[in-house]
Length: 311
Ligand code: GYE
Image (tube, rainbow, N blue to C red; front, side, top):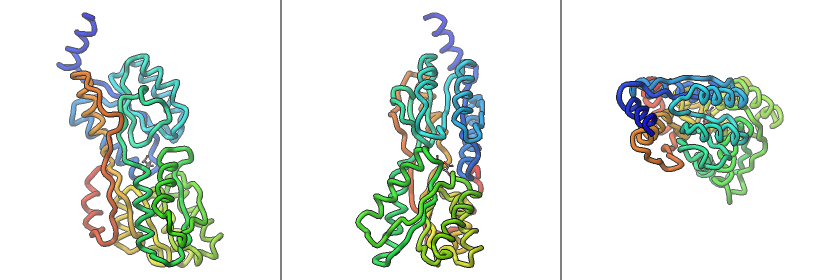
């Protein structure tokens, strides 16, 4: 008891709290911005951040979390690449009484195994995208191609579901191709090339739904190389609201995006501070805002504004 009281006094007084951050990688512009903002937020609060980049591999994330536990860090931030397979390592963290905060993606594990999760309503994002498309095409038949996120990740599962919810009841809208582009620009382009080929050179495609902006940006390039006009011949709707999609929107080559804030760490650190200071248990889910942007929302101004936000 004495030892832990002393540690608590130390923690609240002089010594910086150490936070381990197991990041997925840098697959997208949004992800890179989240990393930058996390570093900025840690610095602003005088926290010592230990950063580990998993290069998209769950096994690397599990190893990083185990090494944070061995070091005895004060908390762990985990952006889980896929939703399953976390029970054992989360149990180890709980055993060591190290609070874990999930960032931007969810896990299938029991919520008692982490302190809280900061993220958006990923199903809602897909629904907003689907509803936007339904409003756009009205009664016209519309063949949609879908670029999914990383297979087994919660945003890929939820954004697929949400979009289907959003177009429900619109029999004229049909998803005719759906494949993963792993949230990257390069794979977005490659998979879109295959979609264009399969769909009469693209002539049969009415719209592209991409689970993130980076895949949409890659696909836009493929559409242009196929001699079609993205944004007109093929409508483009995606998620994240990174600067490059606003640039595409300003050029008329993308139509709509749903915003995801890269600042997941701010609310995460607030929750951790309250937990360290007073043992305050946050809610299990801290939800960030999502809103739709279209070409009508001054994309050039949005581009300029975001360039300073860690992107
Ligand atoms: O939308 C995408 C990223 O996990 C919700 O991951 C996040 C997604 C984000 O690579 O760009």
